[in-house]
Amino acid sequence: MKRKKILITGGAGFIGHHVIYNLLNETDCQIISLDRLDYSGSYSRIQQIIEKNDNWKQRVKIIWHDLKAEINPLTVSKINNPDIILHLAAASHVDRSIVDPMSFVLDNIVGTVNLLNYARGLDTFEKFIYFSTDEVFGPAPSNIKYKENDRYNSGNPYAASKAGAEEMCVAFKNTYKLPIIITHTMNVLGERQHPEKYLPKIINYILNKKTLTIHSNKNKTQAGSRFYIHAQDVADAINFILKKGKIGEKYNIVGSKELDNLQLAQIVSKHIGKRLKYKFVDFHSSRPGHDLRYALSGAKLKKLGWQPRKNIEQRVKDTIDWTIQNKEWL
Image (cartoon, rainbow, N blue to C red; front, top):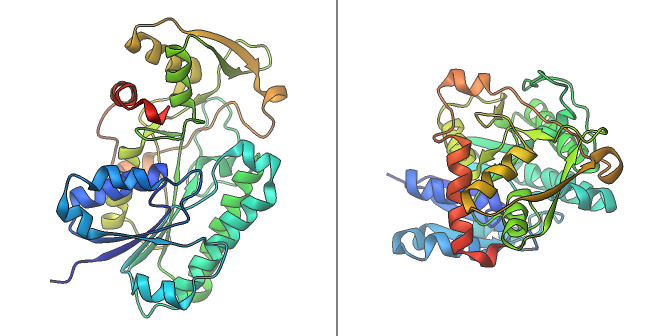
């Protein structure tokens, strides 16, 4: 029986390489990773997960391509008719989008349309999963969790570029009948994350006795909060959606518990056994384009039978232990 071939864009990225690990471990599929290998996508991520397994080395192929350009005939021939497309590649650093919004339009909207046009030229394939973000919905008031089809309210250029790409996916489904599924996920953490991200920064600051900045409300009485989720749980959810997801649907991938950013830092401090030094900073003035609280409802996916395999506290502790043993990722 022929193995399925899965094309993953951004496979060398933080979430992408966890998806590759999950698919190698849970399926027998062939994987094509389409990457441009920039600041957010490191070949070493993929190398570290396949180097100890000769079979996995044979099942993963990496092709360089920047999706701001159309997928040329040579690259099309190298990919050679995938059965499934997972579109994870994106510019994703909010602060960078505020400085240079046009680059996010090119990466996230134009890049997505180039991939959709490639998919439109395929004779047949099963699914195209577009990986979006909770940020398209904007800030979530207390006790509100956004559902998959709630109205978008982008708070920064990154969020707007992801929402725009989502709408192009919907348009290609409606116009060209492409088998599109869209996911939204919340703040993701885990091994081999970019040092700019919050959890590696907490670990680094505590280890080096630096004062951590925690963004809060205007009165500096409440830290921002998220439903944090580990990248392996996200990867597990994507694999689940591949099996049970319905074409044309949207699914929120959500952590099991809401944590504010001070609570997360306190978990790290307690596990490492070193003092946390921090200060609250009003996010409205210090971090325009960011929101105090993001929250999605995970009820739809839970009803289908999926939920995170481990609680977030244990996932955080596992990530801390791994990161301290692999300090090149700090």
